[in-house]
Image 1 (cartoon, rainbow, N blue to C red):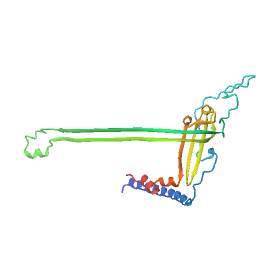
Image 2: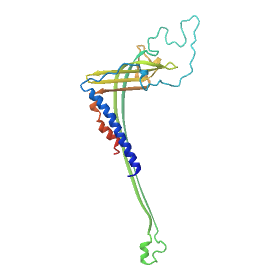
Image 3: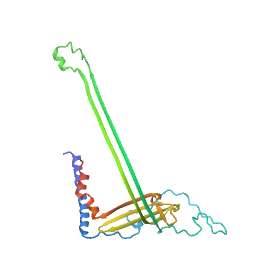
Image 4: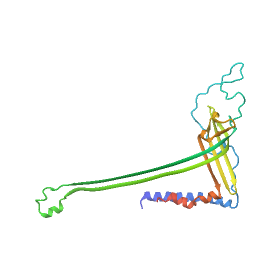
Length: 251
């Protein structure tokens, strides 16, 4: 057996064993929760989660605030009275998630090609004047080649998604230009199923409405996740053995 085939098989076996161990741990966790409701996540500081990274974006040069003598108005203020909208780290604002996506795309490509090459010599070195045995040895045709190829590809996308809900987010960072990084997480448990909604992104203070709400389509770098976990989700997922075979098998 070639060495490269042995290496590929070795890696496949190691990957299968590792995946089986991880899947076994997940199955053990599921066994511990038999008959129990899935636990809600603890309320914690989003910036203290593993993998959290502050957002860094190109910022304009900071402009110093200027005050007018004998005036209550300060240049750069958004309102004369105190603004009740979120403006600093730890403030809360409501994100109105309204997503309505619809896509219908169809593509079809057809291609075909046929080639034929034929090259020969009718009289190779006077083969007609040579005795008969020579005609069987000397070639009458130098090259004869035929080739043909064809391809037919079709693809279609028909997607329609709709999501409308609200979630409260917390300001986790204020960028130098005044824009704010917000993150919101909501978990709802119904019987033995938990629905999760996660919203994160960068918002402008000017886009926050007077009731301290903002539309999701005004969030830059928006990250919105809606899903769940529980008994229904477990049934919808293929068994881990099938997932391993889908990854390992080349056909």
